[in-house]
Length: 368
Image: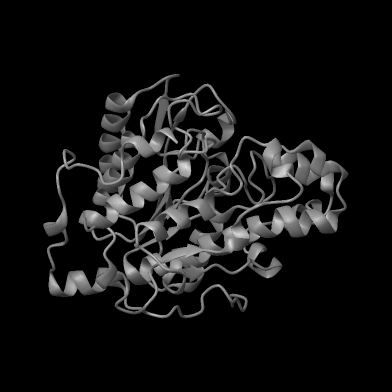
C-alpha cells in the first residue's frame, strides 16, 4: 500500500493549479549569489503574475515540503543519508562554501527549499490530472536520480511526480517527459531506463553538462542541438518532435521541463533563443498537449539570467491569453477534465490561435 502523504490532499476548487511557496527561495548570508542560478527567481515570477492581476495569494496552491517517506518512493535511504554531509550538498549544489556550514543549517537553508519545490511538483502532478494542466513555479531537478544528485539538483522531483501518479491515481499508467532545458535530463533518464511506461523526449545542447552517454539510452526522441542554435531552427525542431512524440504514444500525463537556460546569453546553456522564442516554445508544447486532451504539468527548471523570471511570467500570461490555461476549467473542482471533454466532446481548439499572434508582455521589459 502507498504510504500516507500530505501532498495529495484536496485543493480548494477556487485555486488555480499554480503551485508555489515562499519557501522555494534560497537566501542565506549571500551564499546563493555564489552560484549563477538566481535562487530567488521563483518568487519574482509570482510577483510579476500578481502585478499583471493574474493571481493573488489566496488563489495559489501552497506547496508542501516532501517528507522523507515521500522521497523514499524514489530515492534510496543511502542517498538521503549522504545529504546529511555538507560536503555532498556542496558538490551537488555547486556552491563550495556550503562545505563549511553545519549540516543543520544546510538542511534548513538549502535542502528544505529544494524539498518544498519537490513537494510542489508532486502536488502539481495530481492537479494536472484533475484540472487538465498545472504549473509548479519551481522544480525541474532533472539531473537527480534515485541515488545520485548533481547540477544543483538534490531531489528527483520529476521521477517522484510520475511514480506518485502511477501508484495513486487510477487511469494514469503512461507518461511522457518533454525536457526542453538546455541540458540533458540525465536524472529522470536513469530512473526510467527500463520502464516502458515512460516516453522521454529531450532536446539539449550536445556539448555541455552532463554528457551522460549511459542515460541517453533512455531517450526515445533525442534532439541534440549545436552551440548558438537560434529561434527558427529551434522552434521548428521543437514543433516537429513534440508532435511526433505525442503521436507516437498518447500518454496519460505530459511532464514538461521548461528550462529557460536556452535564452541567448545564458552562461551555461550555450544556445541563442530569444525571449519571444521561449514564449512560443511553451505555447507549442501546451497546444500539442491540450489539443490531444492530455493533462500537462510544467516545471520551470534551469535559467541563469536575472531576466528569466520575467520571461517565465510572460509565457504564463501568454498561455492564459490564448486559453491554453483556462481558469473556468481549472477551478471546476477535482474532476478529471479529460473525462469531461471526452464525454461532452468539447472542441478544445476553439481558443487556439496561430503563432503569429502578438505576445503579451514582450518588449522593453526584457532589457531590465
